[in-house]
Image (tube, rainbow, N blue to C red; front, side, top):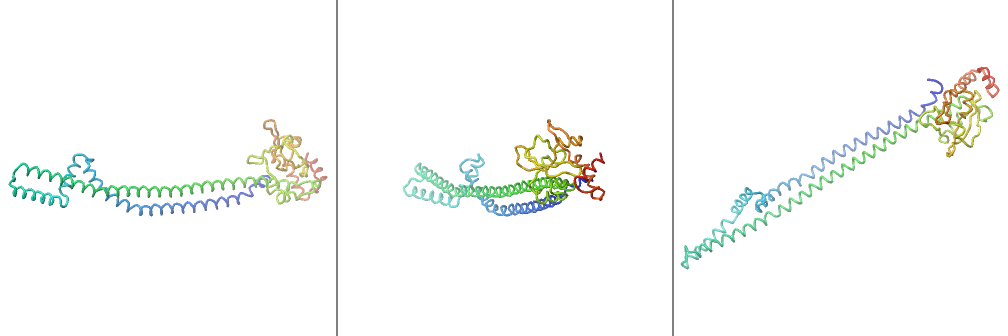
Length: 336
């Protein structure tokens, strides 16, 4: 890994730690929600049992009422007839009534007459109608009970569904929050790597004494200016970066690199955010291969643009070259 590459990635571990924490929290939340879902299913199943039992019992009466009303076909009607004749007290009532009619007929000398037969028929019909009405009245509560139990079953399932849905919505929101946090952590690491990398680059390659910052530029940029004050106009990497002088305003020099490359402070037109960087037109004169064009605008590959300054830094650190503008210029002439 070269000098330039080593400047980037410093925030990756912090970002990964943050991502790991988010994932750990998400995993714990998923476990809690799954446990909650299981508890909901268990408790609602227990709450459902009385309704199911009542519904099953009530349906027996509802079925008999259907037979009685002729809703269940011929077989149902036969079942109803059998049930009516087997009603408690029905046979006794009919028998008692018939005995009374027969006794009266014997007493008044009409035994075996048409009047006796008509009286017996009329009494039998009245007894049957009374028995039918009584049976209907006895079965109607089952219809109400069935409806009440069915409503309870429906409400129980509805309640369970709402609670499970709420848990799933919570889980979905947690997923969105977690993945948003992971994305933000990764994006923050990328931006931090870029900002600290460029600041460290300028500090390591050195500014001339005219900047007033000297070799401490890296610390100044990162410690004082680089923490959120400066942003890079990149799409994810330092190379290339739009650096065309036509895009910039409020340009002022802040120093130079070891090879004499001038470094400026500026902002892009229409954006008041301050930046630190070089001018593409100047770099193109010294290092043409470090400059490319996109849509007629020039962009700088900072790796190629700072190779010479990086080499000169090695000589300065080794004591082979003096610090200061004169030493940089002299060294640059020798390299050229």
